[in-house]
Length: 107
Image (cartoon, rainbow, N blue to C red; front, side):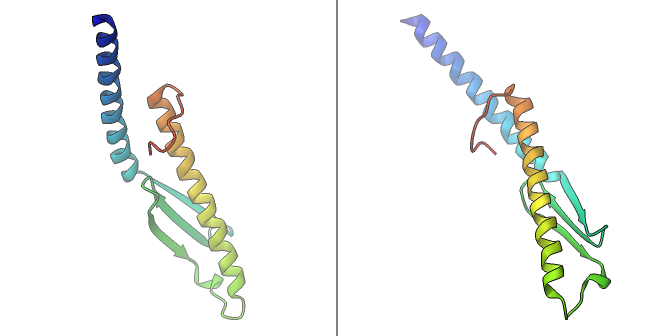
């Protein structure tokens, strides 16, 4: 019986350590950013590891009142790419920390 309890305690300690490491990783990722440029650099979007928009840059020549759809398409492409890149960064760092074990919903 004590062997089972010792095994359980070991698992709990490892889980607590992993939780602490994931919390530190979350803090670290919040400070890291991903910048994406589309349209040859005419539109730039920067998102941090907390998935928050940090900056948007739009070149004046892209702002054409007669073609709002063009700007919308560039913004959509930039945001989608930035979100994808941030998720890849999060997945890579989480995988490195967990040894490749997938823990859905952890970050």
